Image (cartoon, rainbow, N blue to C red; front, side):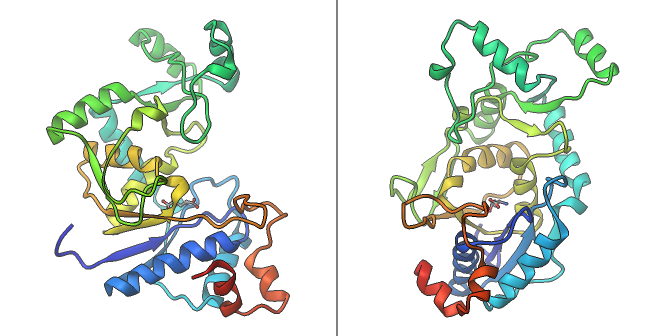
Length: 297
Ligand code: GLU
């Protein structure tokens, strides 16, 4: 995206206190904004209304201020913009690349068990989830309407094959993105997407009318994000995001997937109680400079 002023965001979810991994990600994003002379934004990814709590939201502001960061206001909170994601979903429905999926977890497990393939050998996506076995995919329209009228809850899944066919047709060649930091295998530069690794991924959940994938691409476009910076664990998710950007006619940012912060045993940090949050480190007398030293940024 030439000519646009650089805009970089840090996008935490308020479902726990921030830890050293978040500190690294936030400081990394702010450094990129500094390096490029651009804006640094904070976005609150709280579509998971059941798991997000106000005290964690306050904690995010408190911890980031303590680290010395400041960001553009007002802060965008995803829970206040469900209609934006619904509009994008509607567009995908019009393109006929999504379908309603009524499957429960148990039905999915049963379908896999009945396939004759051992569950241990059933393919999994890059996040480790079992690939969707396709039940409810090729349903007769009447039967689908009947289930909807009955009030059965459903998610919207991307028909990966149709979506890829349509998107590839639009771009007239392989769909790619530019990785400036390095793929998990260390490669920088143009990367070709392989979203089929995720199968028919959920685009709008049963409990909320969107998903991480849908809301993140909508927001990155709405907020004119030019450089998406985030942990390397989300590198494969970028395959889905690029596909959605092509389908929804959204601009393409460049990507920097940074290293992940691990504990002494090499385990990735998480929001579990075992991992010290920034608040605990602060209360134990550490300074922001100490935190930076701990994570090497
Ligand atoms: N909300 C996501 C997370 O906390 C960040 C996603 C992103 O930066 O794209 O992992």
